[in-house]
Image 1 (cartoon, rainbow, N blue to C red):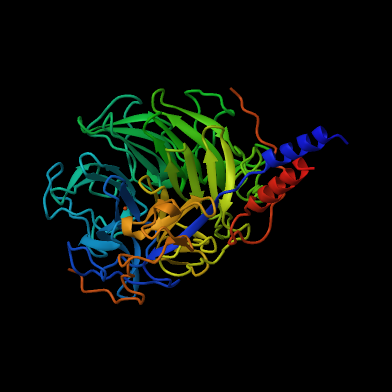
Image 2 (image 1 turned 135 degrees about the vertical axis):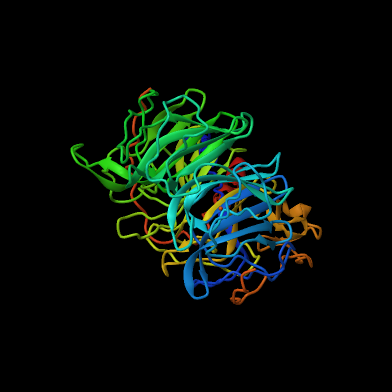
Length: 557
């Protein structure tokens, strides 16, 4: 064989080698308990190392990327040895790792006050499975619907819309009903109304278009004509006019999917569903949606039944139409995910059916992320972490186990590691910090104990040896050479500066007295790997180094 042929083959081999990124996680706040931890309502209005919201699930939150503040409201908690819905509002500072209890406790009935009038006494009351959106410019938190206490002893779905002014520290009941309305009246599609509201619901989607100053909602579990089921309706709330508009979907429950792959049509409909994940892109005015629980046809398209779903859609707010892009429109994928190779993007990997997953978006890279969720009728949960690249619509299995009900690995507090991982969970809250390129995960239910976490975990994607967490700058992800000591070890700037966030409390604290075009379907033929992804993804540095040394040796002949 000629030297050119050998050299050409070697160069092709070297060029084909790439270095995979890995996911590292760090347990940052809360305890490593997998049983209920009650909230500690103390130090009201003051950042505290003692106050904390405790374990919870089905809460909702807001993230302010400019101020690096995470806000949360409500959810299910343990209070006075009972499982109840919370009515508390909290703020968490990512920079100093401290919680601030703003107000509210648990099991409180909503105090609506006068519609449209802010007051210090107004409060949305205890609720869970609600929906939230934030306007960072005006510092306004929006909260819609969910299941909560309209009156003493009641636990009902709602359709009330609230806003909280961070500057004024007051709630305003803006729109919707202050009672359990089982008989909604739909306005004509496309006609705004100030007196007709969306049906009561829980576990739907909400997003805010800050440019047009419009709130949008889609789906969820709801009630029409005193019958409970799954909604497929899209509504738009015009903030300036205080009007709702029924935009898309139907006025019936439990619709099945209508639409062909990648063919836009005003008749497309994802069908009624609850527990789906939605991501809103303010630049393109598209909302992406994945999975949930809803009705679908069986494999022969003749019978409909309630299933976990894995279809991927987007809603175009410019045309008010849905487009079905990928996944299974009928229930034929009952065997889970097509994982492919961990960390390798290709056309075949794809998430299996799931509901109650948690998601976040990285619009800097045009990526959507997904973790966990119930994956079968037995309410088993998965720990899979998925990323979809919206530039080519390829999915990548990024972490988590192929087995169900993976136990969380906390590791050492504030120390990131590829051997740490969130484990199986559902009904948590996640958000992406654009200043540090980190994703944060708060609470949610541990599927192994059926009890929620109280912990906060932060994760990030990095190439081994090329990045380090600097707690002195509020947990920023930086190059090792940027560490003050110019030394990085175990993913941290070393020696650890004094400002490494201290744990609020490592032991549970008792609650104080009361005072969130026709695309072709991928073949999905990859074998499903087994085992855990707790170990770090493989690096190709050794291969590259060996190849380069061989090349140098060969050229010296």
